[in-house]
Length: 147
Length: 147
Image 1 (spheres, each protein chain N blue to C red):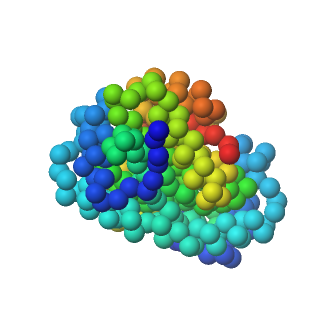
Image 2 (tube, chains in turn cyan, brown; image 1 turned 90 degrees about the vertical axis):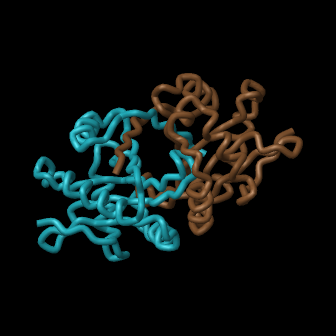
């Protein structure tokens, strides 16, 4: 049984481990804890932006970030954006990811969002099948530019 | 000469017109001003989330939304997200869009973002060429789900 809750500062080492244990994350997550603590504090100052963790038998085994974004487009819709979805590699294929998405959608709905959106790297083909199974339409191209 | 500035409530009719005068927007923007005013007030309560307008000769001719999102992934990077980019149809092809993106990137940079991201509907082929010319990589698939 997995239970999702807002992350606390004490969860940062576990979240860092989940982010780094990933096909893309392992090349781009730096082992500098201070920057993650500073980023967590910045997130805590952003009322629309939250990190969640999934806990099972006292262990953090999954994480995601949810940002609520009010907007004028789409007939003045509020949207929710999911980032940084990660599930412990040893638990994949057991429905944890689907439970995570249900949790995120419930929180998005409670916050008044009419749309949930996310982007997934083009290389993550398994993830694309996963999101499509859950009813997500691959309707957009996600562009990124480093500053 | 176009100048970008934060939008005010007085700009809402002009922003609504820009959002509706669009290949996709014309089918999905509802002419209910009250909902746009309410959404603008909600945006004003979200410190990381701003709507900007571009003004030329006293007229609002372009708009975009910029959301600053701190995060733990990508080595604890802050990112900036651009939504709802629109330029007056009569001014397209004159560099207004590129000026808009420069303005957005400068504001993103000033806010400490290391990455700018956006999604563009797969049907907007001209927009994709535009973003690629400006250095945006089409590295992701953008998934959306209505709640």
